[in-house]
Length: 151
Image 1: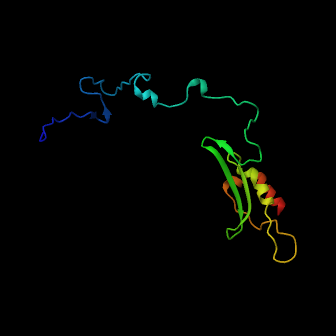
Image 2 (image 1 turned 180 degrees about the vertical axis):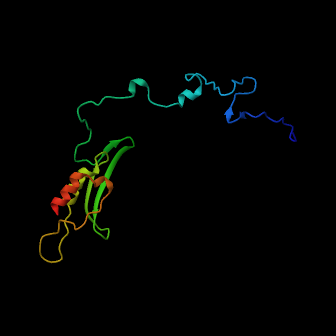
Image 3 (image 1 turned 135 degrees about the vertical axis):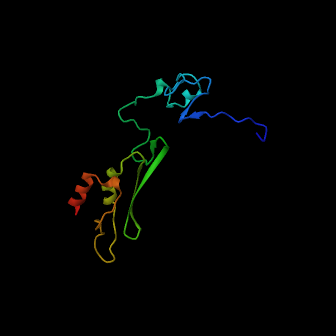
């Protein structure tokens, strides 16, 4: 009252918000507006129009990029994955670039086959790592069997 404003009546009574005392729907009842009316409809589960929700793919596995390119399409745009094999000190031994939508476990074998560590003296370069520490994406049964078989 000090500033000249009248106090407002409370909108909440026992944790229920009512539109006002004149239109009180009664205890325990809740009136909802029609869902198609009002601006809330625009934000209630937004999605594209019904005709464009599920666009069928054209062709069996249609891709616009050749297989030797490392560009993949996803919701975020063009993406590329960098697969890197390093030694214990973090020095790169092999690098492989793939499109972003390709799974990591598919590229694990070609990545390990690219490892070539030259020896200090005479002899062939070393190709088999002693230990492999990898991400969870590389833990498929097929890749583990490949590592056991390779030794």
